[in-house]
Image (cartoon, rainbow, N blue to C red):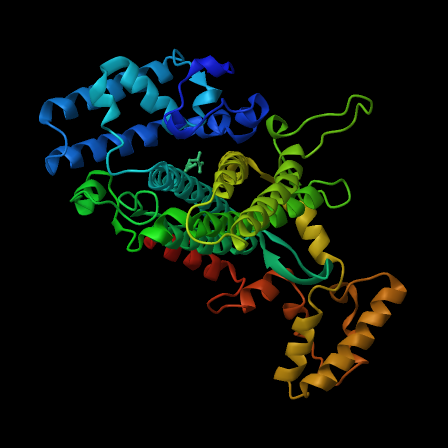
Length: 465
Ligand code: ARG
């Protein structure tokens, strides 16, 4: 879309009380059209609803209303065909569209802004825009979750070491690990839906700050625009951007989760772990090292997380010093919000595409689980079942582990004679609890890593969709 920078390009609707033209740099500095033109569809939808409402209360004639609506629809087509000349001197998306409307349809266009201000107009536009984006993002979270459920089901028996402190802790199944990410995304989705409730309220009718002297019917326009209700205080309606802050808080939490997931994928794809292979189409190479295949996608998602956190900080800082009601500061709400939306959408899309294509290296995972004494807790639990107090059992197993470290073997690789020297409670059946399969199968309660539990968790998740 082209932008006209010349001052002659547009007569400012507010120029009446001014005695000299705006300084050229100030014009560019204060203009937002370069980034708020992406609100055009929602600006036009808001204007159409406002025009219908004005006709409904008799402020516009039916003919004027039709002219306005048709004019706005034509403008939308022009914009979509890239035939709209955006003008910086007309400051923002709202004045650009309104000025073009008047150029096209004459005096009726000048009546559209009756009972309205750009302050309630912009707040309405952002909420409409954000609502649409929230719905797209929610669908993308669901797509990623569906991929995780399939992967979890497929890999419900695949054993890998579970870690704490990035040290081998206890065996878990890969499906259980994937379901952990599923759960985090479930909460992210809930947060997003909760945020949507507060986004989907209509500021229109607040006018500049105090409301308007026309007998407006706000419920009428709210219904046309699909809002759940109206903002109940005009000063609040035009000034607060807490709904955008909430969205960025949601986005930050989601990206924090995706960043952790990314970190695991990067570690797992390394030659040292070698737990997964990411398909070539999600990786890139090195211009100097021919052997390299780099996990760029998760690395970039991890990297992009910072800009979303930054946007949250920008918006919080933007609001914190503002007296009621609208201040021009609020024009700075858009770029952080838009950037967060774009980053969230891009990151979710690439993850939803990539996750089902992750190649799981079963043998590598199992081999890793067989080293690092991952069944040590199982041995301690076994001793407890045979009458040893847990603290004493812990001590016994610690000694067995020390022998393993000194001789370079895991517990299951020791002989019965070696193991039983640490406690008379160790019997010949000890080896049953030292297998990886026995270890995971034993954790057979809701939230545990037993394959049966993972399958049940996948089923519950599918049933609740
Ligand atoms: N471009 C402005 C914004 O983004 C629109 C509202 C401006 N209102 C005003 N009175 N200057 O916030």
